[in-house]
Image 1 (cartoon, rainbow, N blue to C red):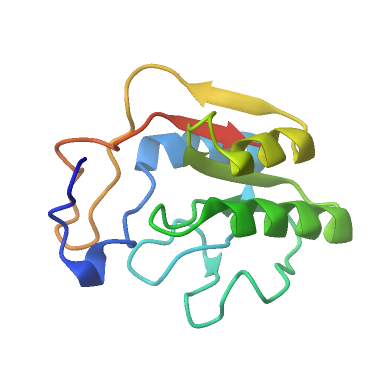
Image 2: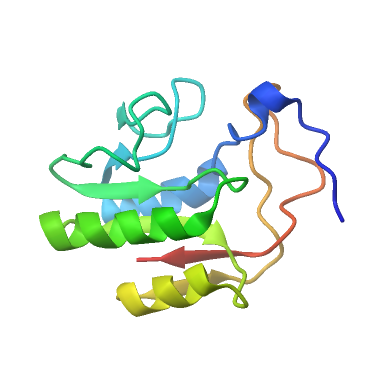
Length: 146
């Protein structure tokens, strides 16, 4: 078992690697970061923990990026993204751990139009505490559900 050394206030505040986000943003032109705060958002508009992205609508004109906290359960995020897509018909790109053995992964497969596996190693997320990439990398590979 891998035990995180990240201090609790920063544990769920990791930022998506800039180069990964920028490549996706060129393709999708994101207008909303559905799970962020002022220290780790990569979009002008974002939903904070206090706004609770799982209970509010993701209303915005344009594509939505969602990289939920990995310490949370993924199924509610997968279901929320599917619900928001059905409601608003806006592109939603979710960056999630690649764990094909889970029920949420199979739910995401059923509710996505496209799946992209990130295959050249594990992503190095950026610490909001230090502003630097993590050294060890993520504990799993990553996948994009679109």
